[in-house]
Amino acid sequence: MNILNRGQIVIFPTENFQQWATQNSYEELFINSQAEPSVYLVEDEFWDDELIIEKHRKKILRREFSEVCQDESKWPIIKDNEQFRFYFNAFLGLIVVDLLESDLYSEEMDL
Image (cartoon, rainbow, N blue to C red; front, top):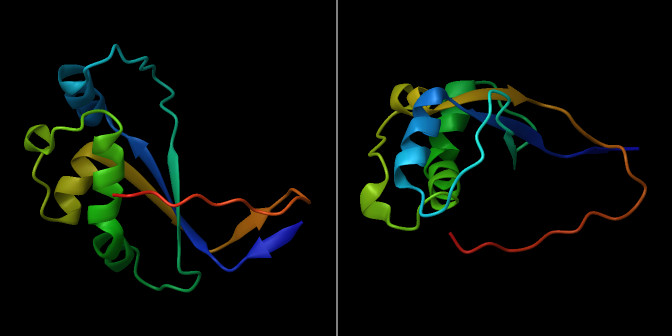
């Protein structure tokens, strides 16, 4: 078991995101009341949740919306954290623990 030098932002889609996704996906989506969250690892020491969301908001939005629809013209325009929270609930934490013994594997994404 290892404590990683990362904090985390855990993103849960809101009903508003799910409605947008249903209207804009080219594929049939499986959406239920227990939507699966996404976890984004960030710097491990931060004091202001709002500043961390603001700092990483564009990357998170790009990843979340592109998973549903590649046509950026259909993505909602989100300019602040209040609008961000219309589509996502965010929970932040400072400690990430790796419970596995095997090495971490990472893969680069182009976003």
